[in-house]
Amino acid sequence: MFHKEGFNIITITSILFVATIIVADNFLETYLFQKIVQIVLIALFLCVLHFFRNPKRNTVLNDNHILAPIDGKVVAIAEVYESEYFKDQRLLVSFITSPINVHVTRYGISGLIKYVKYHSEKNAVTKLQKKENKRVIIVIDSKNFGELMYKQIAGAFVKRIVNYANEGNSVLQGDDSGFIKFGSRVDLFLPLDIKMNLKIGDKVKGGEQLVASK
Image 1 (cartoon, rainbow, N blue to C red):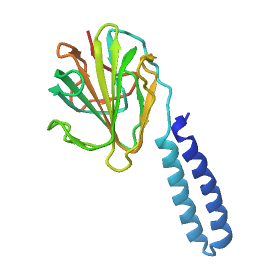
Image 2 (cartoon, rainbow, N blue to C red; image 1 turned 90 degrees about the horizontal axis):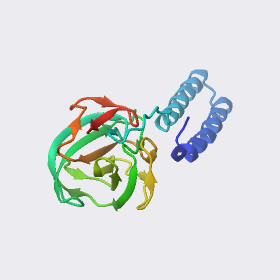
Image 3 (cartoon, rainbow, N blue to C red; image 1 turned 45 degrees about the vertical axis):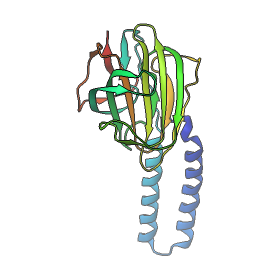
């Protein structure tokens, strides 16, 4: 199963892949060179399919649980000052996604979208967050945790964020909230009194892994 954001790229790549294979078979005289070109093309095509995969996740709905918003690794858990929306101290939980991870972002909790803001410029914030690339900030008003923020941050090379959250929309825990292409980070800003279920270095699966609870 592949993410819809990859359909066009997969289609174009498939056409180019078939066309190049045909050209290699008909115009490259050296058999060994033909096979090398074909192997390289197959590897690149498989990489594209791997990147845009969208595996089904078994999300157990629970208003007392906050789930991981993306696949990746926990790289920071720290108290920070959130200056854009809350303007108070929050618990920051940061997840880094590598190019080999699933890049689908998911809602970690059900609720109402209260705030959506897209930033295209780089902006220095905290030492933990350093300088950021393009990013989208989303605030969800949840039943048992109040307002929670998560931030999608694009990677340094391909700065493309797809965000499906719109202010006023009701969203369901585990549902698709967007896609970040080619390396990314997602930050959660949680209440200070929350019960954490993760530690730095833990690897998580979006839509399944428990991050924190009441």
